[in-house]
Amino acid sequence: MSSVLSSVRMRCTRCGAESEQPVYRHIDAVAEPELKSKVLSGELFLFVCPSCGSKNLIGSPVIYRDAHLLACVSDRRLSVEGLEGVAGRLVPDVGTLIEKVKIFDAGLDDVPMEFCKFVTRQELGKDVELKFLRLDGADNDIVFTYPEGGQMQMLAVGFNVYEDCRAIIGRNPAITEGLSGLVCVDREWVEQFLR
Ligand SMILES: [Zn+2]
Image (cartoon, protein in one colour):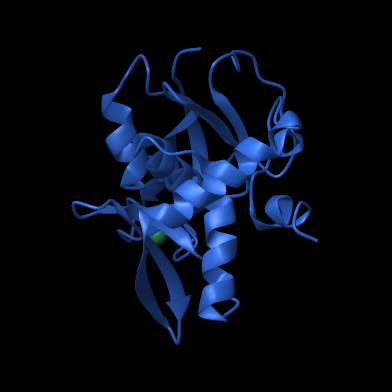
């Protein structure tokens, strides 16, 4: 796979003006590592309207690949090749893709991370959508963000929580047995093992 960029006619959601915009279908961050930072910043998924200057989200399906991860941003199952040696993930939106890239970039795995979120939600006693932000400090605390009261909150949990989750997964091979092809590893996926 290499990056595929096509010119697509897009419509501004603010002023309605139409313009031709470069839109990525495939993002190959192995062949073009500089694309990863533009994925992480969100830049590759936005276009600026030439008429009014508004930033618009490009909502079309895209396949992203780097050394650890092959992820499809799509609401339906796409068939992809080249899943050997990488985690194949189906993600519903760009925000989730960015989170997955951060997790694997930090040398972590999204399966224990989703379990870690489950445990953290239980401890918090709040039903919030946690997103991994980064590892922090000498002890590699796991920093999550979540929206609450119209603001983004930050929360750090000890790395031992992640390690404990990884150990539980290691003792339960049934959890990772189903991880072939493109899998949507999210809250729902984790909760099927915890009922
Ligand atoms: Zn516009």
